[in-house]
Amino acid sequence: MSEELSAAEIEEKVASGAAWEEFCEQLKGLGSFITDQRTPTDAFNRAEGFRYLTRLLRNSLEGVIESGSAEYPVMRGLGNMVKLGADNPDNMYLGATIHGDYEYRLRGTRGSVFYLSFASISGGYGADGTMITDGFLDSNSLQVEPDGSFEIVLSQRERPGNWLPLTEKTRSLNIRQTFLDRASERPAQIDIERLGEAATPPAYSAEQLYKHLQRINGNLHGTVKLFADWTDSLKPAMNALPPADQAYCQSIGGDPNIFYFHAHWALAEDEALEIRAPVIPECQTWNFQLDNYWMESLDYRYHRITVNKHTARYEDDGSVVLYVAARDPGVGNWIDTAGHADGTMCWRWIGADEHPDLEARVVKLEDIA
Image 1: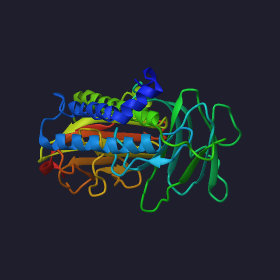
Image 2: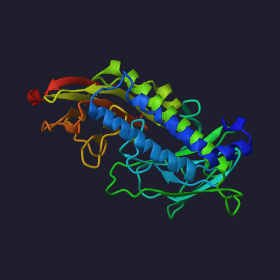
Image 3: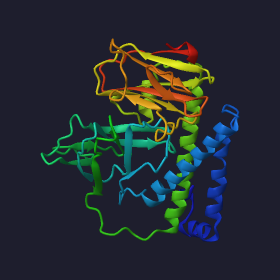
Image 4: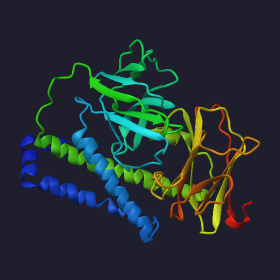
């Protein structure tokens, strides 16, 4: 580890190229998660798995090397088509690296996005495999000025107005913007600054590079292992949709306002998974999404792989019926498998006081009325 080396030893490892070679060698080990005996062996799923690694690597390089300073925080979103952990297609994700020893201010304009939440997080997938919510603030309690602007102070010491608590262990800021209709809603615009921040950051150093490369590998290995294990644990709930372990969901960064259902699915070409929500509770919203084996949401740019409170077609009695299938059955709400034969899936009750169970069964496409 970098803490065990002197500054001179670190500089030598960077200058000689040894630090880079070690980084690349460790990076190679990620492939073992994709080719593990528990995972699908077909080329289609393995190709998606390796693509998944490239997406996570791209995002981690940007997030750590270019935007990973808690002293000089940068607000950034997930990179283009970066997906992990059943990413919600209705969400725009933003975040920043922060530290509980500092204080920060967020400035923004509310926009018209349906739901907006802010969470200060301790831990990390590459640290201890958890992401614990230290402080939480959402649009239900956010104080917004008449012109749509707002400010939030992030600190350990309580402040008047909008305040997001930090702890000495806080290491990141997570922001979720949830849309009911992306075409008509405007996202919030949000910037971050550290209070008391120096004018200019110091020049990039060999020690920074060395630590960043180690951090990236730690993040990647922790992230890929966590979701590979989670996917494997969902297999007993094949083609059912039981409630997830809510405490576990919260321990890895879940939104406190959300009640989650997760499961695995597998279908033949002539089959459909019929999912019924007999009761829709009073809630801010709900949604369902289809994911691949690696818990990446399927490509919602070109396929209808998700539905929510606003976009769903309801039955006469107010219930909702979904059909996960390779082709449109012509009734209910069709969820396109987008060329996949198996994967994972997720249902969320968001801001609900009750969390009714869901019904799921496999039917023949030809038998759907």
